[in-house]
Length: 101
Image (cartoon, rainbow, N blue to C red; front, side, top):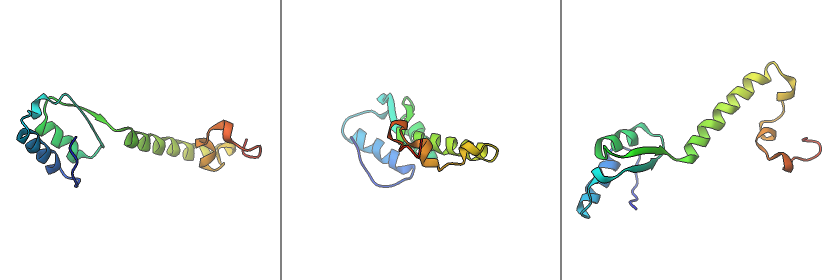
């Protein structure tokens, strides 16, 4: 594993240089898991052209939850039953109190 600070495209090229210094070829990397920053995507595409990019689950869920909440907000404008607090829709139904149900 390789860890470094920074959120810029150069981080990937620094990784690539470090990898070569350890006798490995960045072109042999087949899979990567990154967050969705465009600079990381570009860095992987430039430095590891054979690597398939998978986005990490945290960022995917963050985007999905945001989208679901946006739809809920729009629907709540016309449906009274959706005007309840957002947390009620995110909570496991088995954990709801009698009043929340």
